[in-house]
Image (cartoon, rainbow, N blue to C red):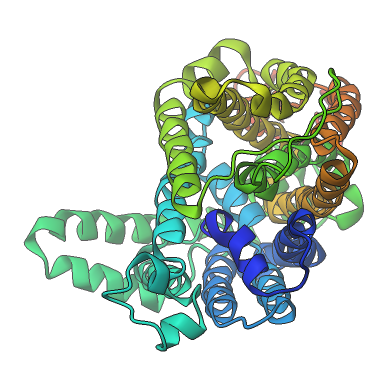
Length: 509
C-alpha cells in the first residue's frame, strides 16, 4: 500500500515513455513483479512451514521485505524497481503462513469470526499509515525543500525516504518476532526457543510485564508436559483387541498423536476460493490509485454514453495517500465491530457466495465517477471506497475460514494455505498488468472504463465458480467417531470418543 500514492510519479520520473497514457501499464508491471514472484514461492514457503515451523518462515519473510524496500528506494530505473519487487515476493511467504498460524490458534468454531478479523485489522492499520507515509515522504526535495535541499541523496533518490522508514519498521517487527512470537506448529512448538526465552527474561525484568512473562513460562512448560507420551510404547491398551504387536497401529493412538499428511491426500481445489478473491486485487492494487492520478485530457473529447468517455481526477500523491488512509481507517472500524457479527449471523459460505455474486457491480460503476459534477466527485469516490472496503473486508475472513475448515489436518494447513496464497498471488499478478494495459488502451481509444468493465466480466466468471463451493466440515466442529472397548464389569462394549474412522462393535482393528 505504501508505494501506491507515488508509483505513478515514480514511473514518470524514470522517463520510460513520453506518453502518459502508458504509465499505468508500467505501474502495473511494478506491482505484478511482487505477486508473480510470490506466486512462484508461495507453495514452497507453505510446505517449509509444515516442516520447520511457522516462526522461522514468518521471520524470513519480514527480513526479505526489509531487503526489498531498501533496493526499491535506491532504484534508479524500472529494471531495478522490478528486481526489488521480485525479491520481496520471492522471500515473502507470510500470507499463507499467517493464515495457518491463526487457524492453529483457534480451537472453537464460535471464535473463528473474531479470530480471522485480526489480520485484516492489522492490515488496516498498515493501510492507514502506509499511504500517508508514502505520499508524505516521497520526493521530499519537492515537498520539504527547506529540510531536504536539492542536490542531496534525497534529490538523487526521491523515493528512498519512505522506503527507509518502511525498512526500519520491518526490522522492529523482526526483533519483536524473535523475542515474543510463539511457535504454533503442533510438532515444533515444544522445542526450545532461545529467542522466546530471551524475551521472557526481558519481560521478567520489567515490573509491569512480569506476570505476562510468568504466564508465558507456564504455558511453555505445560506444552512440554503435553508432548510427553501418556503411556509406554510397550504397554498394551486394556480392552482393545488388535492383531498388531505394537499399540501404535491402533486408530486410538493415531488420533492422539501427531500424524503426517500425505501430499496426495490434500484437496487443493479449494484454492479456487482464493482465485475469486484475487479478482478483487485488480481493484485494490494499482488501478484505483492510477485512476485517481490520471489527469484530464488537455482537450475535451466527445462523450457518447454509455461507454465512450475519457476524463480523470488529476490528484497528487498526498491527496491519494489521504484517501487510501481514510479507506484503511474505515476498514479498521468495520473489522472490529461489523464483520464478526455478520459472519456469525450468515456463516462463511453464505456470505462468500453473496460477495462474489455482487462484486461485478462495483467494477461496472466505478469508471463513471469521472462524469460526476466537480462538487460531487469526491463524494462518489468515498461511496465507492466504502462499498469496496466493506466487500473486501467480509471476503477475506470468509475465505480464510472456508480454507481452514476444508483442510484434512492442521498439520497440512501450511501447504494448503501456501497453495491458496499462490493462487491469489497469480491473480493479483495478472490483474494489475492486464488492467494497466487495458486502462492505457481505453484512454487512447476513448473508453476510459475499459479496464473496469473487463474486470466486471471476469468477476462474473468468478461468481459462477464461487456458487459451486460446498460447505466444508470444520475441524473444530467435526463429528466424533466411536471405537468400542470391552467393559469387563458390565459385559457391554463401551464407546470411547476419538477423531478418525469408526470401528464397528466386536471387530478387530
